[in-house]
Length: 238
Image (cartoon, rainbow, N blue to C red; front, side):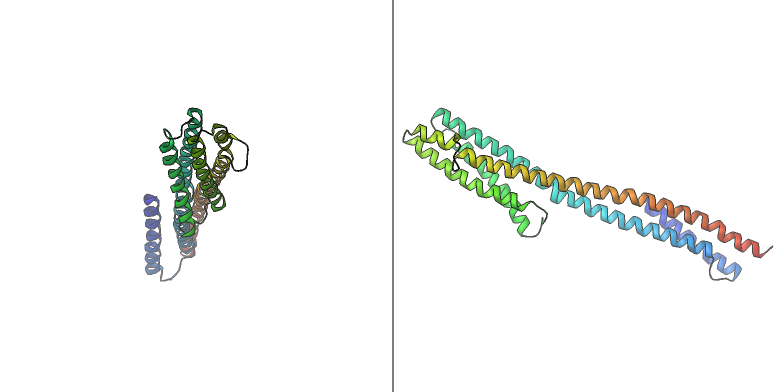
């Protein structure tokens, strides 16, 4: 883009120099053709600058509000699945102590991601985040962690059936239910982040696409205006 900017500024400088030269030679202040050409090239340069800046903003938005949250949420979902695996394996082994650290580490990682995204939203750094889904995931995650502690207590006293019901049962307060709520909320947030990323990238591309067409048309106008302006001057001396 720097070469394009340099070329446009050079053309504008050349048109201004040509206009000054004709002013001295013909003793007329303005040449209509050169004036139209200068206006067209100036408009094209301004258009390109605005389109470039807007494209940069859209690309930055795609990264900040789309790509970064998408990466964080995807990692959080992987950790979520690891935590669920550790929890169900503990039930199979009838001993939660062996895999408790895996569950705790994984869920803590998920909580850190969700809390950071919520902080970014409420602080105004990332206002387009799907905060409703993030808050829903945070709430369900806390309930899941509480249920996991209850599962551990039941396994510790030998209540395997009670632990099983809390781990894989269909009840509203079971770990399976809370896990599904967290997972569904994170999946919804991932979908929103992906859509935000795609929309911002599309916007950036559209600005650049329209700018190339517009600058091409303005360049044609500038190219045609120059000989027309000289033709009028040459005709006066016939």
